[in-house]
Length: 349
Ligand SMILES: Nc1ncnc2c1ncn2[C@@H]1O[C@H](COP(=O)(O)OP(=O)(O)OP(=O)(O)O)[C@@H](O)[C@H]1O
Ligand SMILES: [Mg+2]
Image (cartoon, rainbow, N blue to C red; front, side, top):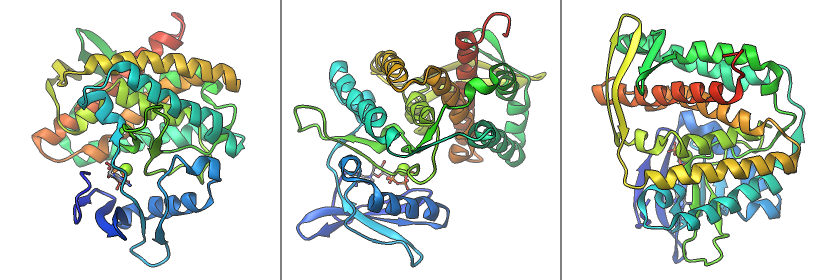
């Protein structure tokens, strides 16, 4: 948002309006029916997080979580999002790395150790695989053309053949088994996408950041779930796909989804790629420090599952909407393949 008095942003789950809050700009966020649960969870989180964590969340000014529609008010932060830093602004990659480093330090050094608990046996099914299967089924039921594309057994892209996402998922579940179960669950952010990470560019130490739109404070989850969300922005360039900044040509023939060309359109793709390698190193360090040796593996798994689970959010029954849905799906298929190449042995492939 630009931060102009009276400005309104309507999303699928809420209405955000820029208001005057006694001489400074504030935002009132009001939840629609589908976003009301998340909005109430956000209010609870902003009321209950300890001081050391709260400094990286929006300040809660006023709220009403009882009466529908529920709403809360927070300051308007005239900051740049991680999406702006990576894809839009002429910021040197080192500057973006430093800022991302502070976020990762905060997550692994503070947030993820605040509240923890054990993972139940069905965690992977509940948090990842069950959700992905349901979301793919939803799209297949809604759209006959996508039903063919997502049902195809083979996906041909980058001059090579991949198995479809669901087949890859089942094999990974079978081969990895308990390796995918996190050693412990913790409070997470829950929606750690680029647009929800804001940085104060006026602050020279690069330490000031605000995490918007949290949904993961109440329910304990896998820290790799959050890392997977950042990975899908960095590696799969989800922000560009959401805004149709890509070209995709495909056809479905005889059980194959054949992608003839697929390119994302942005002049700073190399910044994202460099940051992605940087983050992998940071995650390896965090894995050592927190005694969670499979963290990196699970974050790659989470990325692939998030991509394939996001389809209903970006689907529209138009040519552009179908291409957007397929672009996300193809990134998911690629992410599953790269997971298998990286983390399964030759015998298991
Ligand atoms: N306090 C704030 N200061 C500055 N910008 C904000 C603030 N709150 C929200 N925004 C902007 O509005 C966008 C949408 O906000 P938010 O994510 O909270 O709403 P949402 O309904 O969950 O949207 P989405 O479904 O897109 O995640 C953010 O990505 C950010 O660009
Ligand atoms: Mg949001």
